[in-house]
Amino acid sequence: MVQSERNTVESITRVIAAKRGDLEKIEARAIVNFKGSFNDLESALGMLRLGHHFGWKVVHLVHSKATVRKYEEILGIKVRELFEPEARSSYRSKGFELSLAVGNFWKIVSGAIKLEKRRDINR
Image 1 (cartoon, rainbow, N blue to C red):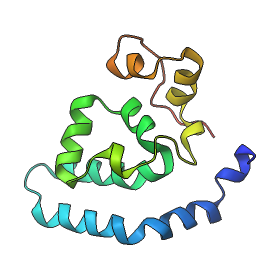
Image 2 (image 1 turned 135 degrees about the vertical axis):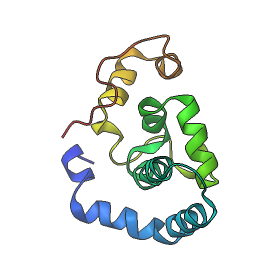
Image 3 (image 1 turned 180 degrees about the horizontal axis):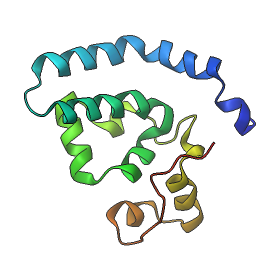
Image 4 (image 1 turned 180 degrees about the vertical axis):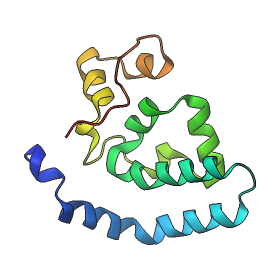
C-alpha cells in the first residue's frame, strides 16, 4: 500500500468505526471511575483514541514509561494488548521513522539513545 493511500479520511473513518464500540466502553468506564486531574483523564483519552492509528510503539516513543503506565491505569487497559505494534499512521511518526533507522527501539524508549523530535508527526 502506498503511504499516501494509508491515511485517507475514509481509511481513518473505517478504523474508528471498527473500534468504536470497544473505545466507547473503555472511555465510559474511565470517565465514570476517574478521580484526579482532569488533564490526566483528557490525555489518557487522547492516547486511547490515537493509539489505534499510530500503534503502541509510537505511544511508547511519545510518552515516558511512567506516563504510559499512568494512562493504562486510568483507562484499565494495556497498550500492548489493545493496540497493534504498528498501525496506519506509524510511518508518520518521526520517532518511529528514526527508530527504524537506528534499529534499537527499546534503547530509544528508555532514553539510552536520544532522538530529537521523536514526538513529531510528519505529513
